[in-house]
Image: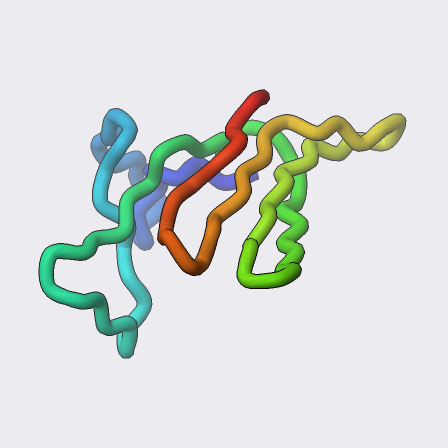
Length: 90
């Protein structure tokens, strides 16, 4: 696993406390007043994010994975009509 704080030259950079502004891909255009932030992260465990879109609701689930099991670690639902996050219960 790579640390989020490793720089391109392999050195360890300064860590940021959550939430912090995310590095945005080129071409991403946000409306005035909007920003993208990292609210939580795990750079020590292997896993994957499953995204499902049903009826204007985007549901995300993060699973940690090892040789024995998959474990649901966190989840969210984003209502695309209201732009509100719901149901972070884990």
